[in-house]
Structures are given as C-alpha cells and as structure tokens.
Length: 220
Image 1 (cartoon, rainbow, N blue to C red):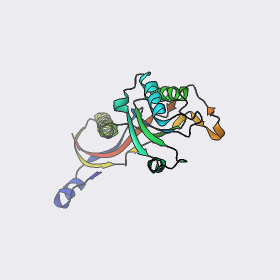
Image 2: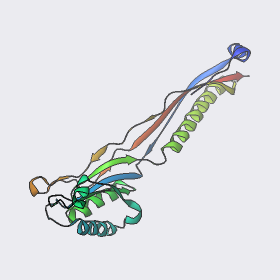
Image 3: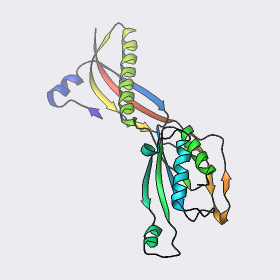
Image 4: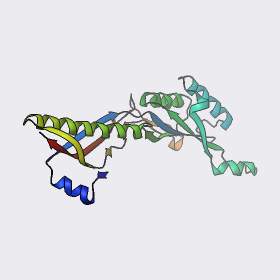
C-alpha cells in the first residue's frame, strides 16, 4: 500500500523537512483449525460393514470429547457407492469424512482414537489460522507504531519534533505457511497396518510480518 500526494500538495512536501524511517513488526500464532480427511471403507482389513465402522468412528471421537455433530461432516461418497446401488456384488462401499479440530494435540488424539478402531485411512488435509486477517491488520498497525517511535526518538535527540506522516509505503506482508513438523503416517497395504508413529503432532507456528517506510514532517 502506498499513500502519495499529487500536484501542488506534493510540491509543498518536497520543500519541507522530513525524516524517513522504517518500521517493522511480526507476530507468531499457532493454528486453530486443523482439517483431517477420514475414509471408511468396507475394503478395510477387518471386513466390517460401513455402518459398523461409522458407528465405531463416531464413538471413538466422542470418547476424546469431540462433538461429532459439529466437527464431523461427510465429504463425498465414493463411486463404489453407486455401484452398490446397482446391485453389483463386487462393489465396495466407502465414505469420506472431514473432521475439524482446534489444535494439533486434539488432531493427534483423533488419529490415535481412530487407529484403535482400525480406521487407518486418515491424513491431514489443511491447517489454518482463522483469525489471520485481523492478525495481519494488527501487525501493520504495530509496524506503523514502530516507525513513529523510531522517528520520535531520533528527532528528540536533536531538539525537533515529528509532524504528520506525508508518505507511507507498506512492503508486502508475509505469512509463513504451515507445515507439519511431525505426523502419523499409516497404510494398510497387503492387509497389514504399517505405522510411522510420533508421540506428538506439532506444526510450525505461523509468522506474520510487515515492513513499512514512513516519512514524517519535521518541526522545531
């Protein structure tokens, strides 16, 4: 974002004394919305019915205080569901769910709970901070305050004062993307569940930063 003056007003700025400073700010935040994809299928190695698997899944999640009515949603039906409706004896019924939790620890507990009922087709689909827009606004304001504090300290040292801002340039705010630091990988290839287990599930914290260049007019 750039705030500029044009025409006569700009000419007046060029003829006045000013101080130009840089301001910077950043904040660190942890994810508050983790989306897991959970697929239940009759092709599971225990050969259970879809209905029984869904019942066990919901019971397991409720057991770790997840409100399944709010957190668990059907994502889509697999094509094999349509085949079953046409009485294809070789069709396999499956269903995919989306599970939303509020932190990494609860995501890990959910994966563990599902593993205990032999539902292993689980992966992390998305990690988000739902308040990222308001966070960016707050960081920009902090960067401006940082610039003003710097300008004030420098001008007071020479017996002057800063006036209004006559130029503001904001460098593009940066947000580091989330990446899993450790996660639980599971597969059931060949009918045998193989696991790569971590004791905790953590995500790199999100850093939002902003840099600004500001010119303040000077007065005695």
